[in-house]
Image 1 (cartoon, rainbow, N blue to C red):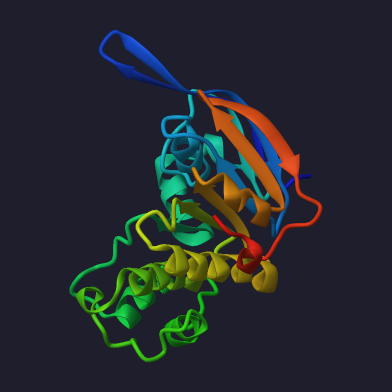
Image 2 (image 1 turned 45 degrees about the horizontal axis):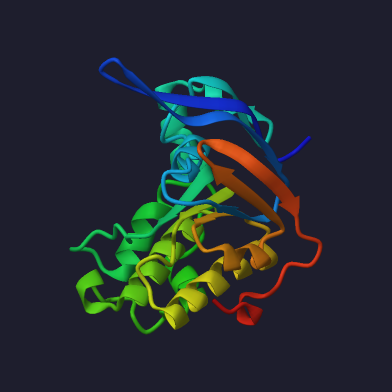
Length: 233
């Protein structure tokens, strides 16, 4: 059984009398420990897909299972628990708590999960052992994103969801962040789903899912994913 299964998922938003289908019959599978790159233009439905997978949005029809669990049928309370304990989120904007240090930001997230990792250990892993007591305003954009990744990894999540994680970063810093995500999947077996509009990043994925106009246009398994260090864009 696949680790993740999206089965004929449709999401329709209603605004007054107008219905907008953000996803239309989307189906795909993901295996445990894979790096999956979801690519498509703005408005294609990528973020809606991620939000449903992460338990932040409901679907209109279809079914979503993660590790054998039917996420699409969970109650609000069960979804909150799923988000807290099983899913790590990394967004384009870092969403750090301004009046907490890097270490405190990570510790706060770690308290939510079972089997959480030590905040200092994870921050050291992402190269911030000298920034533990710094507040977000004292960190560069790349450093703040690394804190956000450490925060997500500290929960020891089943699933790491990343929505345009390098969108606010320069080229070299973005590469460094993607290297951290790639290492998390390869070294710790974390299933990592990365949303991007940058087609060059598909070369790093074990599986590449293309989305257009709310539909899955292709799902391709990559037999020889590249290290992020080998990819140029």
